[in-house]
Image (cartoon, rainbow, N blue to C red; front, side, top):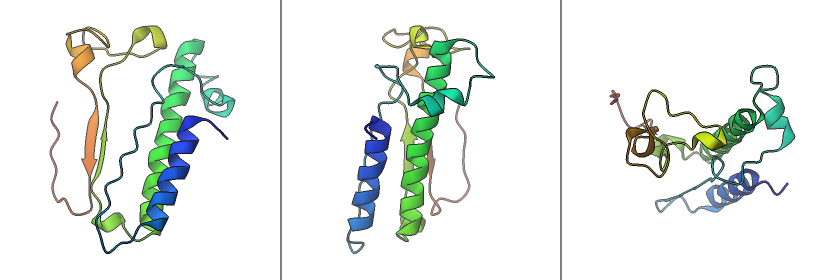
Length: 138
């Protein structure tokens, strides 16, 4: 398939499987799923048909699920290659959502391309088997 999330996942898996593990690997996988164009393979959108009535929101949720599948594929590839235990996995967003595209920033005010918290605060996480403890910042 040519859906960009599939292409990113396929390429990431190729890079991981071909990597010479005697040297470090930096892999940046900038999926653009939640950006325009708002489109997703029907199977992803259908996951939300019985839950969400608004098509724009249903499409967005499908796009996020496809993005989750890319992350899952990258993690599975790292584990298969025996690299997961020596990996720092960082996931982040570039900005807040665009309500016209079905995205919700509540309870934050504002949207993408504004100066409100709904534009400049976004989700992220860092995971590594090498990091002990943890901390959540809100």
